[in-house]
Length: 330
Image (cartoon, rainbow, N blue to C red; front, side):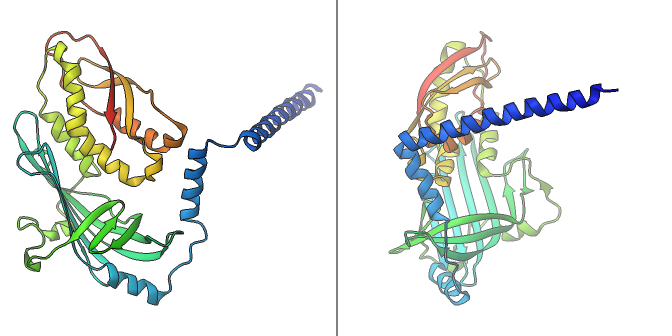
């Protein structure tokens, strides 16, 4: 009859001990930071991220409309040669002076065995300039993708992507170049009727017959296209092949797009990777030997993506191989 109250007292006693230990640990960590501080790079990065979005002064409706007109236009981005380069990219961005946007991206993948693949994303939405960044050099603009669709070669075919997707665009206009999230777009000077690629139907975003996409961006689609081109290789050639594929394909497909999402100070120039290359071309036991606290957010996201990378399977020896290499990030 008297055992239940004893158990409650014991639980209370142990709970008090745990709370006391936790408070002591917090105090010790606080004292350590007061004495030595955060690493300078990390402290500056965290402060910069915080300052960029702290105490922002929202534009008036009049100022928002002014900025919309300021950034409006037909803008293009081009990288690589569609015929000769492993990966080439084209983008066509129309910003109407009321904030409505049409954005077409095309990637051209020339795979290792000579196949050529064109991947396209068509997106419709709007952008609404919200404020200046703290340094006053960049517009922070709330951007919503209302509808988007992807066009890929068979057997993937066309599909629709997520709708009502929100993000913050960082936009600046320097001279005649528009920079959006660290990507520079030049003004289009040709015939407006020929601005978007002739074989692209913008109405695809409204087609109700499309299936839902298994992949959510061009990077994932490109990785699937690349993996379909792989042929089995002798075990002795797989290490060199893995390094070549990373530098030639995975860097422009993954790293070049991922880098744009982070403060440049929080992105490493290179990553020192160790992983096990399995007989089927998958990887496991991934380790980033160059990981630093200041680049943790980028490293975490990059490692998550790297873990899904595929390489040619082994044609003979199926034993896993340990790969140790340094790859350029930017």
